[in-house]
Image (cartoon, rainbow, N blue to C red; front, side, top):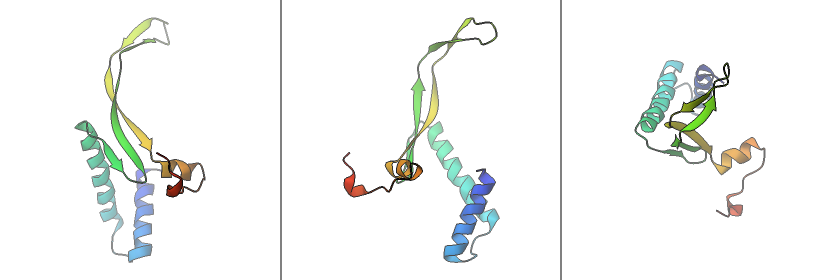
Length: 107
């Protein structure tokens, strides 16, 4: 799914529930603002938790040794922060096609 597909689907969903109150252009601005907010928070090394969806975090990778695929020479890859996404239990259950029951949650 592309961002354009996402905008289309969100616009469609809003128009079904609230009527044609929002244009695709406005919906595109909302989606862009949401994604920009996530990017800005990650840039500032902050975690973002969206309940029922998942958590975006910054994880620091350690320095490691890798190999140049052409020459086979060992190459050192420096430590760096990388963004990671951890899906919520509800999202994992949805993807696995299992009905999530919060009453059975043991964590």
